[in-house]
Image (cartoon, rainbow, N blue to C red; front, side):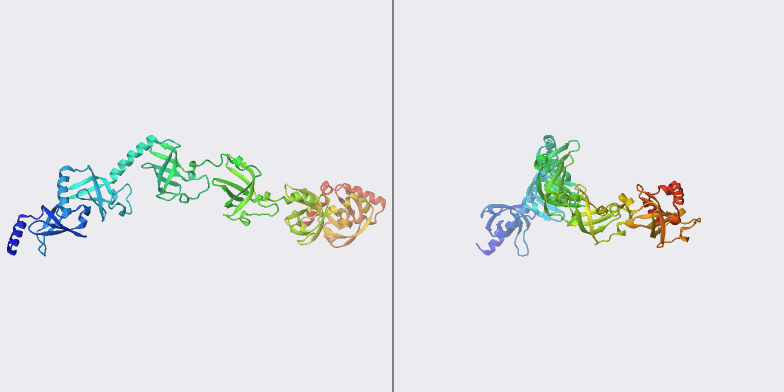
Amino acid sequence: MSHLMEELLKDSVLDSLKEGTIIKGIITEIRPTEVVVDIGGKSEGIINIHEFIDPSDLEVNSELEVYLEKLEDREGNPVISFDKAEQKKNWEKIAENCEEGSIVQGRVRSIVKGGLIVSIGVDSFLPTSQIDVQAPKNLEQYVGQTYDFKVIKINSERKNIVVSRRELVEEQRIEKRRNLLDKVKPGDRQRGQVKNITDYGAFVDLDGLDGLLHITDMSWGRIQHPSEMLKQGEEIEVVIIEIDRDRERVSLGLKQLHENPWEQIEAKYPMGAQVSGKVVNLVPYGAFIELEEGVEGLVHVTELSWTKRITKPGEVLKVGEEISAVVLGIQKEEQKISLGVRQLEENPWEIARVKYPIGMHIEGEVRNLTTYGAFIELEDGIDGMIHVSDISWTRKINHPSEVLQKGDPVKAIVLDVDIDAQRISLGVKQLSVDPWEEIENHFKIGDVIEAKVSKVTSYGAFIELDNDIDGLVHISQISEDHVENIKDVINEGDVVNSRVIKIDKNERRIGLSIKAANYSEEDLAKEQATLDNISSIDDMTSLGDLLDEATK
C-alpha cells in the first residue's frame, strides 16, 4: 500500500474518533515503564505502567478500553489513558448506583494535602479527620490498604466524592463496646492497648471499650508514675475490677494478675527471721527496705546501731543499697513490717552488764558534759554517766563544769546498768564515805573553828569547813550589835573564828556563830535557844537551797 494511502486511511480512522470518549485499542507492546496501544489507523498511544493496578495481567494483542484525551499531541500522536477510561465508566456506574450514606470498598492510592486519595472505582477524597477516631500522625501506613468507606458527599458536576472511614470505625466500636459490656464481668481477664498515660493512671482500649487502670492498681509495690510500668501503644493483659454499664466505664487492674504478697506475710517473714532487701526510701525516722515487689519494711533509725547515735539514716545507708535485716514485728492489716539491722550483731549492752558489775571501780576520760551530768567513755560506743548529784556528798553542784572539764581523767564506781535504756550510771562521791554519816567525828557543838568565808548573802555568810562542808553564820550570829548589811561587817575571803552552835544531820546543816566564839557555856545555851526560834523560812531552808540563792 502506498504511503499516501496509509495517511488517508489513518486520517479517516482518526476522524471517526472523538476526543473525550472511551474507545477500544489493541496492546501492541508492554515495556517496563509503559504500555503501547494501537487505537486503529496505525495510530499508537502510550500509557504509563502506573495506571494499571496489576500490570502482570496485561497481554500483547489483547483488547483494552482507553479514554481518548487528545487526537494528536505536538508529535502528532494520540494521548490516551486507561485510568481515565476506568474513572469515566465508574462515574457512570456511581451516578446510577451510589448515593450519599452508602458503603463502598476502596483502596488508598496516595497522600495529598489534607488527607488521602481513595479509589472506589473513581478517585475520592478522604480528609485526615475522617481516617480514624483519632486523626493519625503517619499517613504512609494507609497507602495501598483496602477498607470499607462511607460516602459522605457526591458532587457530580465537579466529579467530586468525599468519603469517611471514621464513621464506620466508630459504629464498629460502639457495637463492640456494647457486646463487651454485656459479656464481661469482674475478675475477667482482657487484652487491651495502652491508649493514653496520665499522672494518675492509664487508659486502656479493650477493643472499643476504654477502661481506666489507676496507678494504685498497677503494682503491689511502690511506683511514682504510670510511665515506669507502661508505654503508649503497648498491648497488655488486665483484670476487670468494676463495671459501670450506664456510664460505659470499666475499672481495670494489673496487680490483680498476681496474688497479694501480704496474704501469706507471716509465714513468709516470721519474727526473728533474717531477710535481705533494697533500700528504696530514706526518711528522717528510718529507711524503707523493699523485701519483694509490694512488700516494704521499715528500719527505724534507733534500730540501726546498738551504740552509735544516728540522727539521720542517710548517715549509714543510701537508696539502692542491698542490706540484711531481722524481722522485729508485722502488722498485717496496716501492711507494716518492722525491721532491725543492729540485731544482726550481739548487743554490746548485754555484755556490758557482765563486764561492768555494780560496785566496780572504773577509770575514764570525760567525753561530754550536759547540764545534768558528765559522760565518761568506757569503751568505743559505750559511755557511763555521772549524774550531777553523784559528784559530791556535800557540795551543791549546779553544773558538772564546776568540777569537771572535757578530757579530764576521772575515777568512779558503777552504780547501775540499764540495758533497755542503754545507760550505765556512775558515781564519784560513792568512792568515799558520806561525811554527814559520821559528822560527829568531825564537828561537835561548842567547837571553835578558824576558817574562810566562801559566800555572803543577805541572810548570812557561808564558812568553808573541812570535808567540803559549808557552815552558815546567820545574820543574827555575826555581831552583838544589829547588822543591817552583812557586807558592811564581813566579806568573801575573810578568815573568821566561829563556834558550832547547831548540827542538823537530817537537813545536812551546820549553824555557826561568830559572836558566840568567846561565849561561856551559859551564854551559848541561850544563843542556841534563840537560833531555834529563827523564823521558820530561815530555819527550814536547807543548806543547798540557801547556796542556790547565794549564787543568784
